[in-house]
Length: 280
Image (tube, rainbow, N blue to C red; front, side, top):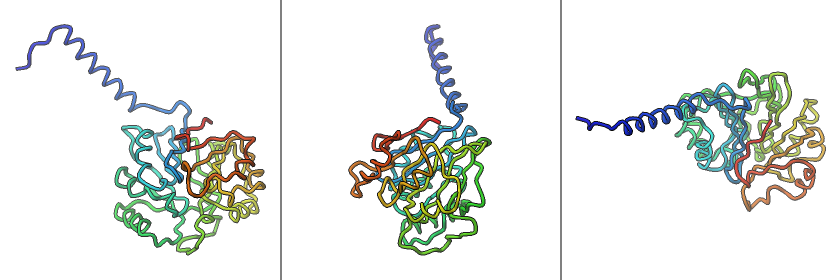
């Protein structure tokens, strides 16, 4: 038989229970005040970008080089909403997909978008096998189909171009096969341009395509490498804020001083200072 509680103990126990219940309800019904949340995760030398919609959808673009992405997602995902609705791999270089098996073991993933270019990496082959094992929907991006991720937002695919398939392509330079896209609101207003590791060849092709590249936010291509971020490309984007996604003291020297000089007049945010969640 349970011991009799004093009135004070009874009140304290009920207050504690109500507090716990309140915290649970806050977590369950939490909606971002901004309507949309965008986070550039601190995963070291690599890219990992999380988009969270007002409808509780989670879109993850790249994973960074290792399992640290799981730790970072743990700080961002709602306790009651652990599903990744869409994972986008811009291109199969390790610093963009190295944490994917950790993701697939930790979180349910509904759909995966990848270009389909060939990679003989054992980790990449293990990723494809696990995707097939879990029967995850596979999507190939193309510029003639945009992706509605929310009632108020969509992903405007810029590259691969319409009618161009990269499935099975073998190439030494995977960077220039990166999926490039703009996040737009329902009115078509650009919020941010993301180009993965696209280098100057793809930047030139994007300029020649005649597509509108302007966006107030731009994640510097290839972690701020001098092989990307051509001045004419930056001029077409006309960003107000640029984001550097790179690791502390990385061996590649990213971001390159020449690139940082080109954008020195802009607002610069850097994941080397921790995860970034810019305001819209």
